[in-house]
Amino acid sequence: MPAATLAALMMVSVGAQVSLMHSIIRITTADLHPFEVAFFRCFFGVLVLLPLIIRNGAGAYRTQRLPMHLIRTACQVVSMTCFFFGISQVPLAKASALMFTAPLFATVFAVFLLGERIRSRRIFALALGFIGMLIIVRPADGSIDNGSMLMMIAAATLAGMMIAIKSLSATDSSVTITAIGTTMVMAVMTIPAILVWQWPTLEQLLWMFAIGALGSLSHYMVAQAMSRAEASAIMPYDFTKLIWASLLGFLIFSEFPSWWTLAGGSIIFASTVYITYRESRVGGARVASEAIGERG
Image (cartoon, rainbow, N blue to C red; front, side, top):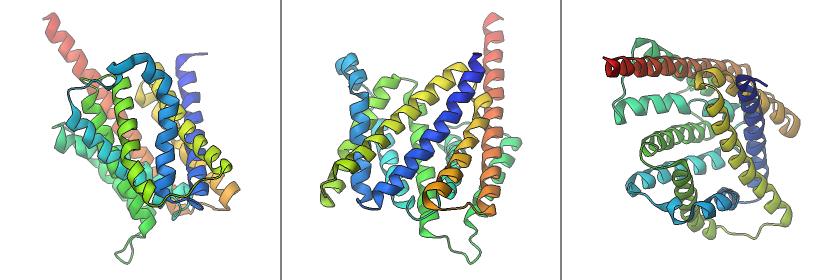
């Protein structure tokens, strides 16, 4: 099978995995506090990563950039907490559509925090994406419902985590970034989980293990897809998340996505795909220019 085709199939599979994980989160948070579910998400995530951590030994936690790891952890804690609280308040498809804004926020943060430069085309795409976000939440009376607000905060802080990981990847290995991040988030989430603790049933533990396993598997498959094809080539398949979320929302929760959600989500997604495409073109041109300079 061609590498590009395999990468596309992986991204379609990731869409199904992530949507299924979101569905299970909603099911478990109906009976358990979101803080506790978030803790077990991290706990089982660490268990899944444990063989990789053991194989790398103490080196998995060796870093000279602890402050940046703390920033990354803080962003992930806020993002996860807001998402786990918000997923029970908005339809599944709407939650998925709003989370598409994370790359938009990441582009804005990269400009102000990393000093990256963007031109008029990407600025227009950013504006269009945020218009799509407004179409979904439709603050006609000047107010936004709590669930949508939580999802937007989750997307923005997820973007902050992405920027931190991008910065850390220049000096730390992916194993170190993953091991330190997952372990620190679990340690932080232990405190609020204890305050609301109730012993889960075996069935609930199995559900939460599924959350952790699906989360780790989806991250691994995204990394594998990225290694087989350019981001701009596989990004369009990320739109299947909205399709899967709409399907599972209907089958499990009897939810039908509104036309506002589908229209806004499509606009947001189109803008993120274009931004990814432009970044890959600019990045490729920059590499070529540097190579010519070196040969000269």
